[in-house]
Length: 431
Image 1 (spheres, rainbow, N blue to C red):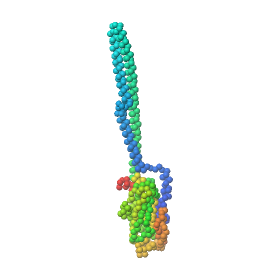
Image 2: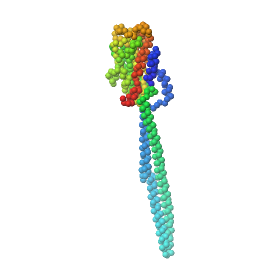
Image 3: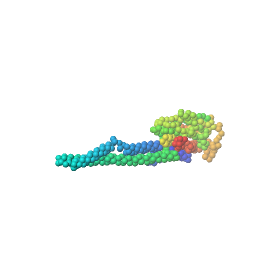
Image 4: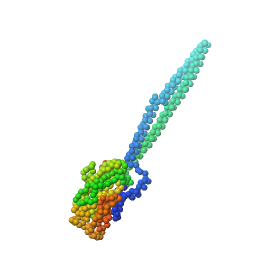
């Protein structure tokens, strides 16, 4: 999104005699729409959701297994209350049944004694024994009935406990199944997000981060052919949070004083850092991370501009910005492409050009440049809302031409420069 808006701004500058436009209004137009939409979860948030769902499912599986084990083993332990009560009731019922059997036998024996008695005295004694045996048998029968009832109640209580445990297992199994479904949904959401991230464009995901600044210092107002100028690009993270990977961007462009001839081939911009002191082509800087940058921290990138000895007089600019890419896939960057202008002087020449250098054919009179002559001006150049440090050499034609030409060069940079989507894909595939 960031680079697309910038490219639109630069294209507008190329097609109209104005300086490089600021991209702030474009972001302002998109902000209300973003506010009305619910923020999509990040990859990291989806991963955390999967982890939580996995833990919930694992806990549910353990709960079901524990409940089943308790049903099969725990409920049948003699120390469990309902099981212990059932065992005691069974013993009491067995004892009562035995007592009743003995009492019933005593009645039978007493009846036999009565039947065998021959004297009145023996008959009376046998009758008394029979009556007592009958009473004892009745009491034993009642005791057995009570013991049987208690045993039945104990058995019912224990069965009720078992039924309750079975119902508990059923609820736990349902909770386990729900947790499993939730886990599958979370895994699916994560997989879809990761798949989408691999193939999606950064539009709608990368956000403007004006607090991530890239500022040039030490670049002179004028550079001379055959010389080398060293200056600094300082990237500062003012976002308030750590940025996992920060990508500074710098590129140098130039045009002759009339805006006809591109001077990029005469300008060689190189960079190095304390961590990577070897000088490298700045064209690679747009795809090179300087590592993690904590909140309110800065990192300095050294820049070295080599100016070819054969360079024509003209106007140049160094364009800078910075992007970031976090491990969770979120990304963004400074929502503009700041430029720092400088005047290009030929070797041994002055502000008006190099009198000893062959005339450039494009400097000859043309319908757009009837005089073929130019002059100089120290008018400051201001593009994309930033004050440049250089001056723009004016010509007999429209003085906006060098500005437009430089903006066109910046447009080419945006087309081949900072491409966060490539970085994200490389990061996700380990390339």
